[in-house]
Amino acid sequence: MTVTTDTGERATGSLIGLALGDALGFPTEFNDVPQILAKCGPWREMELPARAVVSDDTQMTLAVGRALRTAMDRGLLVPSRLVRPLREEFVDWYQSPENNRAPGRTCLTACNLLKDERLAWQDASQIGSKGCGANMRVAPVGLAPGLGDEQRAGAAQLQSALTHGHPTALAASDLTAHAVRLLAQGTAPSALVGLLRTYALDNRRVYHERWLGDLWTRAHDPSAEHFVARGWDECLGVLDRLEAALRAPDPESDPCLATGEGWIAEEAMATGLLCFLLFPDEPVTALRRAACSSGDSDSLACLAGAFAGAYAGAGAWPRAWADRIEYHGELVTLGALWDQ
Image 1 (cartoon, rainbow, N blue to C red):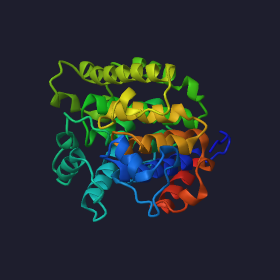
Image 2: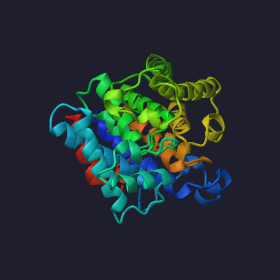
Image 3: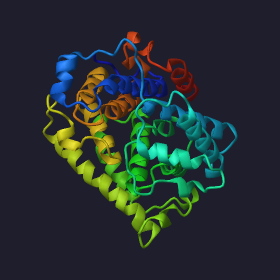
Image 4: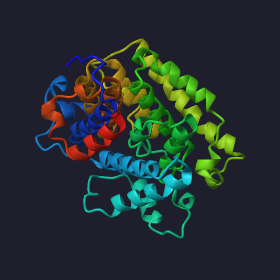
């Protein structure tokens, strides 16, 4: 399916794409490529399951989106306005009976700690974890209009830090939100990786103390700048791998062989981007490539869908798929708010 990039409704397209990728990749998670091909047939023909059920990736994306909407409804987006609704949304998700979609251990551990209101959120954060649960849910921060650079970066890192406190989780979340924002603004896919590299280098020693407080002191770094630079350096390293893969693209190979399986934040970002950039004008094919992979296929396809939908808009997705995705109403409502 080939689309043009003037379809509009880019926030809606990104959120729907994210959920579609999640639902397409959820049944193939924990399978290798031969197992997926045996179960689903040729990867370019993979179909959305009849019951298009999503994982915790979409559930937590909606939690971030709701928290962001609540905070922005109250006025200027500042840390004190965002941290409370984020914390409440994460705890609500943790306690929900719908939290039965194979969530990650880091999110479960941190959200259980966040229930205790006497505990500073920094003490709930899992400082050693850089799992992809931090950046697979950050797309709303890239889509919400009217934010300055410092607000968007701070919010992206804060939503990560409540659960995943590792500096690479923070940097990858920031970089993922920035990629979504660039694509929603119409950035050409061919320019994207270079712009992300510049952004990473510009922010390599920027610690957003206003948003993160003393989080860095939970690690063993000599300074806040050293702490955050570790994360950006790992992201720069995976961007090197992404650029190498794009110089000699191999669409028929498992994308995880080039940029990693995606269980960790920087690899999820890079492999999700690789699947999108291999097929920038074929969004459904990008989802299928990510879902037919040996790694964290629902998170990889979720990210590929967020990137593809931000670039191509809501018209990118087959109506027969979009209309039956779980949480369709909430995804469209949130997207429409930001598309106005």
